[in-house]
Length: 271
Length: 271
Image (cartoon, rainbow over all chains, first blue to last red; front, side, top):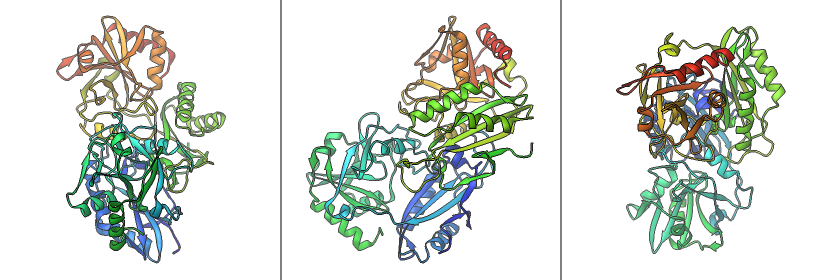
């Protein structure tokens, strides 16, 4: 492997300073686990990318083209992270989307992150962030490039916690800075409703599908989360992390969490 | 003038694809009017940039360095627009700001925009946008790079209006997609409170200073705006635009608007 970034299919390390991804955060991204030279949950990532592009009124790149580039970059990578950014492209001044926008594709392969070895086994320590998520149904669920709230939230701690939970301005718990949250209480599986803010993660979608209707999205208050029997976090790279501690409370890795982790391992959805 | 963009002081047309400005919109911008080779309201733009950088916990570039680059780029430009982007710099994966972040400076000079000749004289037609502004006091007022709400709002019309007014999720009128709003009612000058969302424009600050306490920031409802005697919009490039129409209502260019326009012309704050 002699390069790690493709910009519009060509090895490159830079993008136009006029790109609307930089100017306005006018674009989307996907973070994909790579194992044995292939991106995992590829169809789900493409599907989300195209759905989000349509919601932003943004021309999407060709699926076959993106697939070819993704696999080309991943070839030979035993374990890695593929990040895909798609923007509305380079343009002149002004918020109005250009009528002939040509999307920019940026694919980057980076090393598999070093996570604590026991994260997936004994669970991780988590905190509540002070930084809130603003609500906007037009943007809710979309994995877009406007991520300052996550940057500010992740600035609140250094290394004492593996993740921070974010609330909206009404105090509902929405998600982690880089992950989605699942809550198990009295045998029922819940995940926060994302109709007003948050990112509808690909791994969240996969987990919901495994529970096949037995898991529900709903508004969740801090108390609902703190008092739960089991908590776990999901994203495409970490897969599933049980939460072992939230504030003063400690949690065991319970049977529901164990079951979904086993399913994820069997399906090899993560790296 | 042989170049139009400086990246970290060097003529260049591109930035690293790893720049956090692109990855997360983790940065700020300023749009500055240029006349006779010099940026207008330069001290105010620098001041706002540094204040916003501090609020994001972002290292700011050296003021003298930015000033040298700004004036170098503007030299010889009779009338132009200088856009400055400052990001938290290039870094690896993850929302956590890198401990040794080196900010990226992108300065771009572009031609003066073609606005309708009568905009500043007889006023402009304005509409209400459907796209709302999410509320987040941590980000309110900051001219940051997370601008998808403005992009979506500006997508709502083509050329029938000069500007669209945006509301927050409670229905308060906050600002235009690219401008701030002033409302004159019964001889009192109001501008929307920006403590929960919106951009605190440099030209807005200049106008507020001219009224020296006789203008007030307050929550404004649609009715407050529609029933006003005079409405005008401000930004650093357009200067001051009277509003001549909003929905069904027509407005005259009244005495308060005329006075502030005359002051702006005399002070040569715009190009």
